[in-house]
Amino acid sequence: MSTPDPREMQMTDNQEPMTVTTRPEGDTVVIALAGELDLHSSELLTSIVADALDGAPQAIDIDADRLSFADSAGLRALLSAREAAEQRDVRLRIVRVSAPLGRLLDMTGLREVFGAATG
Image 1: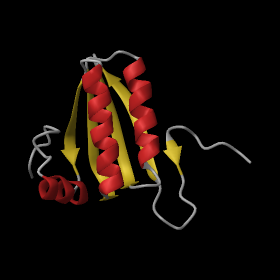
Image 2: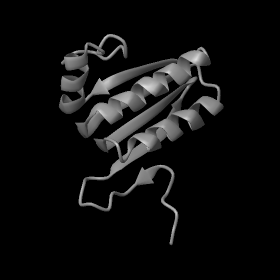
Image 3: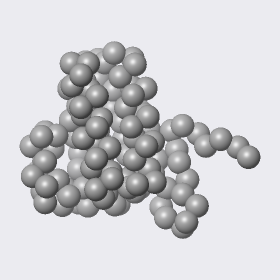
């Protein structure tokens, strides 16, 4: 049995996979998410953010423009990532927001907490 690539996780129940790519931009790490951020994939996000923090960036920008779905478990992973970043004095914000994530941030009043622009 092969181990999944740490940057990509495939779902086995016909759900869209979440893929994560990271790239440095100066002293910032950009983490781009695509697919579904849910209970199945939230652990992957937590792991990727922890890896990024180990590199001691000044900031982490989440590009979530290509998320097709986000639920409360995904939101919990984002909040956990933000807390881990704050503990290391690293700014974490969501720089691009998909419609599904935007609705969730608006419903919970967390859009400003993540510095996520509207529209």
